[in-house]
Length: 325
Image 1 (spheres, rainbow, N blue to C red):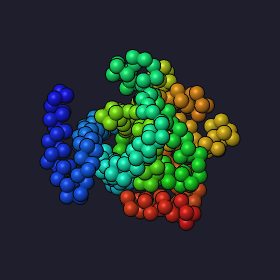
Image 2: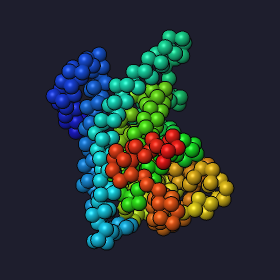
Image 3: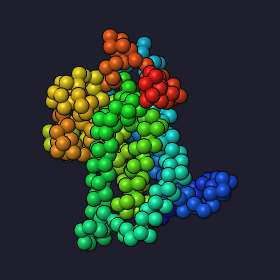
C-alpha cells in the first residue's frame, strides 16, 4: 500500500507539479513541491471521503431536512462551502502558504540556530518515544489539538479576529462541507501559526500532512448535518456532530455560564478532543441539535448580511474588519 502511494506521489510530482514549478522559476524549492504532491493526494482522498461517506450519512440521518420549496436556496447557500473545501483540500491555499511563508519561517529558525538555538523535537522529550511511530503521532496530535483549541478560542475572544471568523458561523445550513467556510485572511493567520509551530516542535513534513488530514476529516464529521452522538462516555472523549453543533447554535450567549460566555462568545471550541473544553470551563454537553447561524442574521435582530457567494463573503469580511459592514 505504501509503495503504491509513494509511486502515485512521485507520478503527480513529476507530471503535474514539477513542470509548474520549473515554469514559475521555483527550481530551488523542488523538495517542497514533492511534499505538495502529498498534500494534493491527501486532499483528493479527503474529498472522496466527504463525498462518498459523509454526504450519504447526512442523507441517512439528517438533523435538518429542507422542504422542497427551500431546497434550491439551501443548495445555493452550501455551494460556496464546497468551493472553499476544494480550494483548501487540494492544497492550493496551503501551497501558496508554503511558497510564501514557510521559507520565511525556515530562514528565521535557521538564523536562531546559528545563534545557538538547538534543533528540537517534541516527541524526543520522552526517551525512546520517537522510535514508536503511533506514540509519536499521538503526542503531536495532542499538541496540535491544543493549539487548535487555543486559536479557535482566540478567534472568538479577539473582536477583530471574530469579524473574520464570523463568516464560518454564518452558515444556517451546516453540512460536512462547512469546515472550510472561512475568510481567506482568517485562514492565512490560522495556518501560518500551525506551520510555524510545526517547524518549532520538529514535526516531519509527511507526519504533519497525516496530522492535518486526521484533524480535518474529524472536523468534516463534526460539522456534518448528521444526527449522531457518541454516547455519554464517547461525548467526553471525542468531538461529535452534536457537541460541535452546540458551538454553532443560535442562542443568547448569556445562557452559557453567564458573563464568562459573553467574553468568549460561546462554548465547545475543541477540534478533536472535548477535554480541553472540560479543562478550561467551556464545555457544554447539553443534548440536542439546535439551529445554527448568528443571531444578528435573523430579521428581528437586524438581518445582517454575510454574503451569499464566495467573493461577497470575502468582501464583507474585510468590511467588517474595518468597521464598514
